[in-house]
Image (cartoon, rainbow, N blue to C red):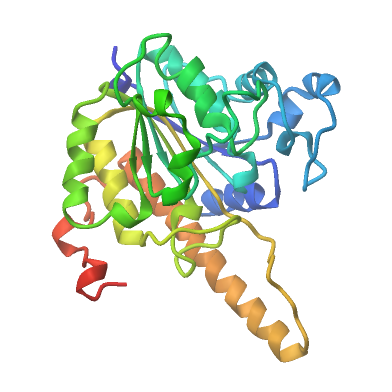
Length: 315
């Protein structure tokens, strides 16, 4: 049995308020999903973690041992003859993709890891043995995606900041390929498809919505410039060309970092803006999930020819 023969199971990983909002959103929209929290699933494990730092007062957002993350996720997600598709909130928890990819590894001897994100999340992984949201991809490359077999270019970055690729040392770059945010246009969609075809057939897909332009989604950290049509086209391209063994989508953040409310009119405007951004972001999650689980079989996905180039006046 291959990964393609396994059904998808949807999970909401609720380690923050944004994750809980996502769980309720998908429930209200009629999706069958399991709502989980690794903190609850593996409470005993966290007794042995150093306090580290956490903007949420939550050990899950601090530096964590790889074994702790893996066991916590495995305690919460126990897929049997299924593939896990996980939605969760803030990008501060993105290192839990390490545990998710370890679960997905059960069904594949070797796979391509596809990282759609405004950041490559590799920084310092060669010297830091513990996980945090900014370094976990390097640990996936060494411990998960290749099972000890170094396959050329089996880590694919899509949408990262141009300077973030410089964090990766030259030896490691031999096993990665990057489509930076300023390269995802026109013929590069075809180049992405070509690269996908040249990599291991099985794939794990992780999407941080901070890759999107400001007006497309409400997220934490610095944001990219990808548009919804572009992202959905890429997701559909990955889905149609690879055997997905697992996937996750995250990035939604409910805090307003730039809020400096001076009067009631500004407060009302901020409230309305936050409401509209929240609605747009949740719908983006839903569109991605629908593509991955084939909810709308035969439905319309944007054709690459329908995506205007920024150089030709597109947004």
